[in-house]
Amino acid sequence: MAGRGGSSAAARSSGGRGVVISDNWPGYSLDLFTYPQHYYGDLEYVLIPHGIIVDRTERLAKDIMQDIGDNDIVVLCVLKGGYKFCADLVEHIKNLSRNSERFISMKVDFVRLKSYHNVLIVEDIVGTGRTMKVLLNNIEKYKPKMIKVASLLVKRTSRPDGYRPDYYGFEIPDLFVVGYALDYNEHFRDLNHICVINDHGKAKYRV
Ligand code: HPA
Ligand code: MG
Image (tube, rainbow, N blue to C red; front, top):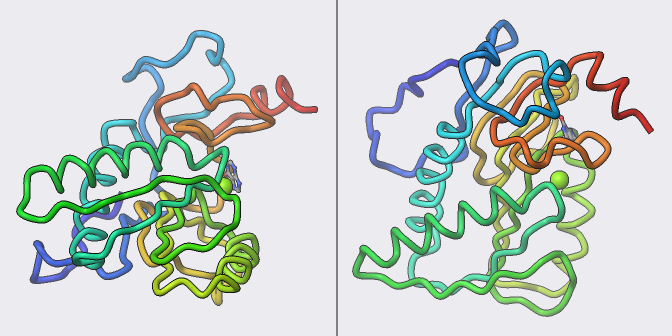
């Protein structure tokens, strides 16, 4: 996991950067963590442990709060994969807001279109960005004052012109990942860590 971003202003908003996980990152052995027994034999390794996801999400919450100022926001959760990240992000924003001078009012909704003022779209993963562009086009019809996108993960795909969300937690190699609400045919949402699925797991849950 490549660590330091090289910015001199550590406390400042991270400005659209995320933790970059390089292609040669070996991950962590599954034996170092606990995970549901029904997935034994189905995973290759842990790409991002749950604790790191939560800690990184706390910093994203801080960056988002700095950027939105005094505006109230509607947090729009893209189901189903986004629900864990969305729940943890909202919890962090609430906690940071409670412990500061500034209380941000937040309404949480799920993708379901109506008129909104300030929208924060919360996604689990952005690949080519095609899905996100369609969603943004739909939401822009309602002319909100602000639309921001936060995605836990951005996948490095072969397309260099790929869409970049305003906030993201981790940039990951072009691998299929599961856990922390990301699924493979509806399985693995109950896994806490983000892991790389193996061939056995793929065969077992293939539809
Ligand atoms: N995992 C789960 N869902 C996804 C992925 C992934 O790696 N990429 C796009 N949707
Ligand atoms: Mg998604």
